[in-house]
View 1 (cartoon, helix red, strand yellow):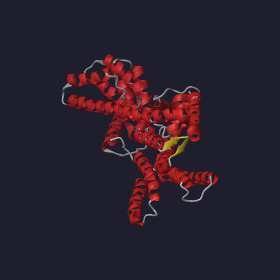
View 2 (view 1 turned 45 degrees about the horizontal axis):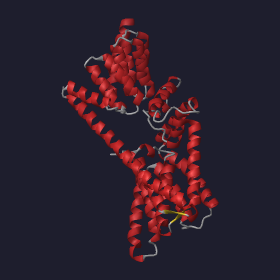
View 3 (view 1 turned 120 degrees about the vertical axis):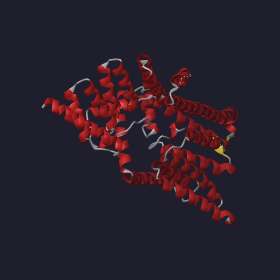
Length: 442
């Protein structure tokens, strides 16, 4: 499924509700259907509230203020509408922060780390799509200089989104190109406002679509709807719907009509392209799962053939390429595994990829490379005991008693985010190993 969490689902439902709200206001005068329309609207709002998707709530309020202003449901001037929006934001942000304190603190950590990423590449950016390959490395560097047992470390996790699509775009394309994109967007909006008018019979459709667009744009400042296929497609549908509600002014007839037709055709083509890309991605995930299952059943060669075909097809799924590297590691083709894990890191970085990389480096007798990758995996997500335990065992295998004792004590004393039998087992093994070391030393 494309919608995999409450935040994205709430954004989707909020945009639908705003579009529906415009038609609901047109039906208020018709007593025959008023009750049924009101019931449907009430159900929609109930689901939006119950889902507790804070980004969706922000988007809904932004779109609602726009509708109140444009449909004149409440007599508002532009300045008053702007003032109401500002007040809502000032009041809403602290409430939303307190609603899910842990999640909010986690996002503040992401913003703090990503600010360093932007500072290092502010002019031209790190490259489109490279946030997911760079952020976790910066997070690892951040925790090498901070405590790995404080609350911030406890909330850290593998991150591939900035939870602010506009901010992430700025980081990826840089200030110069971002300014260019913003200028083009402003020029395009001004041209539309100057040369096009709304068809009277499609007024509600236009304003409902624009409210839904505003909803997704506002929500994108606190989430990642533009990195989700379904919300990408829905956003483009809203844009196309708004375009079909416009008509050209007489003074701009010839050029403007062609431009409008071009845009009406362009966005559906983009949706088709996204659909093809999503299908290719899902096919790759299915085949990767098949390869993993074959490996579990002992069909190593068949599994490797599927992974190789995915690689040859240009798969950009880091998790799949990591799984391929693990299979190569299991059949002891360590050089090929090293090449594949490098490719995986070009697509995506997280603590699991660096843990596999460390195992491969250790198998190739590259102790320094293995130690570096074990530490990187640990500092990326310091609240995972597995990272510390892997490094602890590495030092035990290399008879590095000093470092083994240091990281062993770190495991014993670390706060546990989610207690489990697995963490209890690792801690027990660590205590036993430390006791053996103490017997030898003393």
